[in-house]
Length: 598
Image 1 (cartoon, one colour):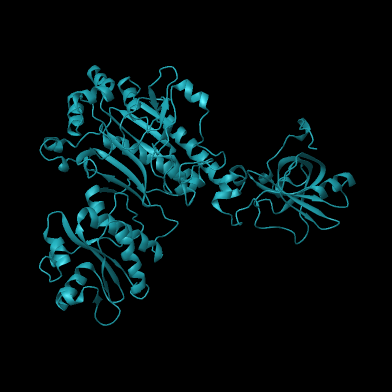
Image 2: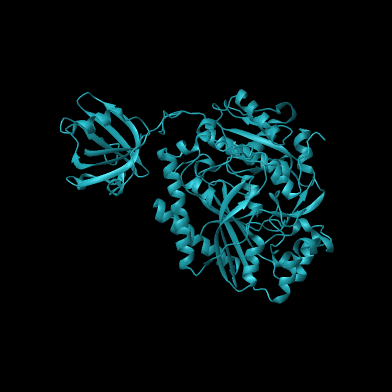
């Protein structure tokens, strides 16, 4: 039976804080047993808490009842141990432990809680299925790597709050149950019991409320905001997430970007000791797509996309000539330097299947192993044409070029994806490098094939560039926005914009998106009305706290920096969430379940 915890059992020091400077000190430690080693006349117990591990020692100087109790201790028992810090014996120093020079000669030992044998060993070196780890997440979270990640996330939040407080920001909470508004993803819906038939939505972001706070005179707002989006999951996406949300009044885009850069410089310097060069490099959306095939490019390596359309317009290879001649079409390629031997025909065939799987109709290649280059389309082109393509691409002996011909909306993202895969395969991406990049001048609209209409690329409250206002009605695809993203190593960290504050322009933007006057009133009437009462120029951004933590911890997935994450099907294995509601609760809400087959 476990012993009761009393004041004498309270820790005086954390396990991982002890060092040779503490030799001779009387201490009490609390924690979990990492392992017990019985050497006959000696027993050692490694005791673990969130700061690290310390060794408890039991020998012929230990009181017999305490020694006998130590013999019965097993992994994951919870202990309170008191004793004297002493140096480890000769040859027993462990340089791989923070506390490896010392141990505690135990004088008092209390078992606060016994433990069954866990379903997996609690350390970072054991290979265990993710499903099992997540089923027993409370055990998984005891692992040092995850504890370090969660503590790193805490430190990021702490630095964020301190930095923005120091710069005059007010932390203000916004509602968690709001009116459903279209923001690019499906809402999570919450039924109202008090008003049957009506529903709240969980916020995809605090967007509208933080704009209203600017109208209310709180000119600098900050919040570590919980956000919810009902969308398919990926390694860098969860249905519920946290963003460092900010908004500023009486500012320009430059002011907001400078404020964010100061935070990034402070954060990476204080936590990682990394120097961030300011100002952060900027690139327009158009340049990013043309050079890297992505609006969040990883610039830690080259392999930029090259347009060879001018060479291909009159070639005998109709796949190339057709794409190069059509409007919004092109022939482009990337070159893997020195990879002709590595990228065999079999490997290239795999890349072809990958390209087809993400939208391309095929993949052409040039492979230069011998004195002259060979290619997958050799019977359609002259030698001189092939050499011209190589010269334009920068493809030389020993290199391999991958080429796609199609509409730009296919060519660029597919080559961008292949570039990332090749970069990882060929080991071109330096791991300990942080490349930040601002992406600016995003298109305001993007064409939706599903609805056959223009939709807002960010959200409908974004201000268009002044020089683009004239194209709102005549040429929506030409309109660029006062929007900006911050990218780190190929991952979007931040998205923000300057907001529309003129109610007439805001209504015009809504109409450009196909909303009727009635729809505008129903969905955004309160916001448009607020603009009639004096709206300051303002803008802001949302910084993804989860993604930031993932990159700073060098974690493989968001699940490694979130205490209780969801998996691919948006469920939580530990608690079996989501679950079916109590029928009585549904009845009170005036709801009933309908068989999906009906």
